[in-house]
Image 1 (tube, rainbow, N blue to C red):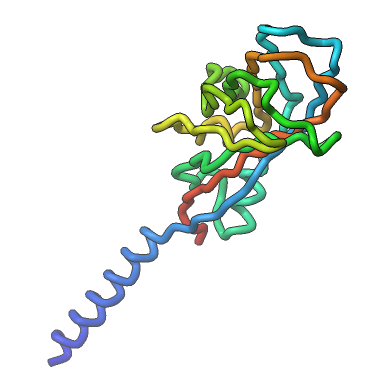
Image 2 (tube, rainbow, N blue to C red):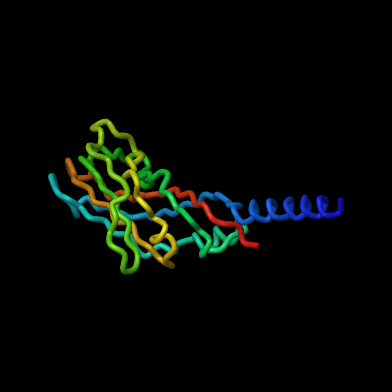
Amino acid sequence: MKTVVYFILVLIIGITSCNKDNETVEFAFSHDYEFTITEDSISIDTVLAVPSADIKSSLKEQSEQNNSLLSLVKEVQLVSINIEAIDPANQELSFIQDADLFLTSGTLAELMVASKNPVPISQGNSMDFDLEQGVDVLQYMKNTNFKFRASFHLRYKLPQATKFKITGNFTAIAGVDR
């Protein structure tokens, strides 16, 4: 009888331990950058490349806040990315014919993560990009810094200098730190 009880106890502890090894946590985080396009910096039918300055990745801090470690992060997905005019806030994005958005970090190759082709002529002051499918951004977010680069093919010149903000929203899946 003792052997059966001992076996069941060992089996329960073993199953519980296996489940703990497979525990994961999912969390969301975002990054944004702002840039200004001046009315005299572009002309009609121009391709304008707008790189960001280095953006400090918050993946390490986010994973630690969620009972994990950077080394335990298994997956990072870009779930949405948006551009909006913030000054003046009423500037419509219809001056953009099409747009591509890239991610780069350290020695990693530039990676196209989103686009909008074509941008509707009646586009308001905010626009969601269409995400590229199957894009793995884990290594880009694991680096200390990364950059976005936007490429815009323009329909016409802006009437005034305009400040824009691009916001990327991410989700991560990580193992739980014990």
